Length: 178
Image (tube, rainbow, N blue to C red; front, side, top):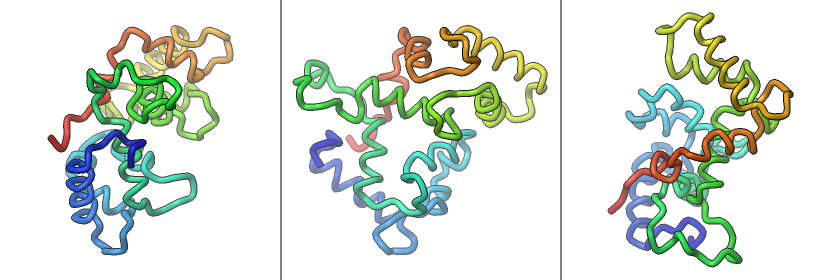
């Protein structure tokens, strides 16, 4: 699958991981299969990350879908930075990594992050360690800083602007399968 940027040996190892997670041995993974991954089980955004693997309305993901989602986390190699722009945006590009992150917050998939969605994700991340009042204050400040058009929500372009100085390529990369 050229679109993922994975090498043949990486695809082979990914398939081995996929197969070991496939407890139903039916060539597809369920949400329960993902929940058995310890790193996802303890991640406060684990459920949101797991949901990202599943297309709308689907409850299983095949190997192709598994690889396409993981490709967002493939580090950008030096030789990829000057890729031919006509060949389309690779899945691990900055724009696609940002879109993936944006969708973790956009719980209702309406292409904007509302105060309520931001609060829900913040609550997932911090648990009960911060009061609702403090979380509300954080959400309000975040929206105030990011919302440039005054609609009291954060669009993808506003999200991108806020993160323009963040090294998303590094922070959203998993060095795996080397």
